[in-house]
Image (cartoon, rainbow, N blue to C red; front, side, top):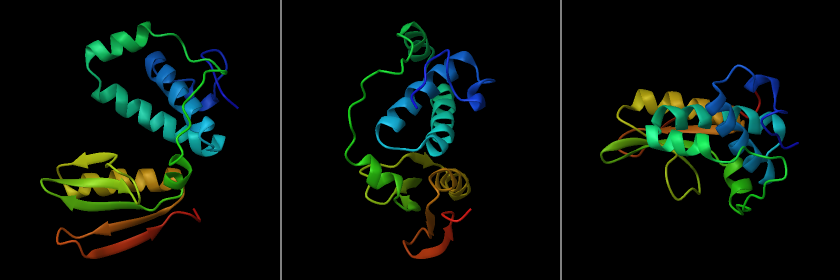
Length: 151
């Protein structure tokens, strides 16, 4: 069920108001793309917190002024979203960074300076999506696999 600033999941209650606004906006887009509530909520919160930590003061100011998300907002359908939702998450080296990317995605969701950072982020995403995680060595060979679909 879509949310707004007055009706949102309890897990968003203690978020900073700007993070909550972003999480509701992201969550509504995920719901529109077919994500179930129990998967959309943690992904939306995680992505909103990441956005908040990386956004410039100007971006935050602009988003604060933007209209609040509404339950009936229209979101462009992402035809690839359902496929990416079920896609295995990979950690691989792509000069000069370690990247976290879902199989079939055109770009990485995260770029990290160290493999440890990339693995930590990839585990979080794989657990949220309830999918497998493949961790590769710098030379491109598969190092290990984890299955989070049953946790």
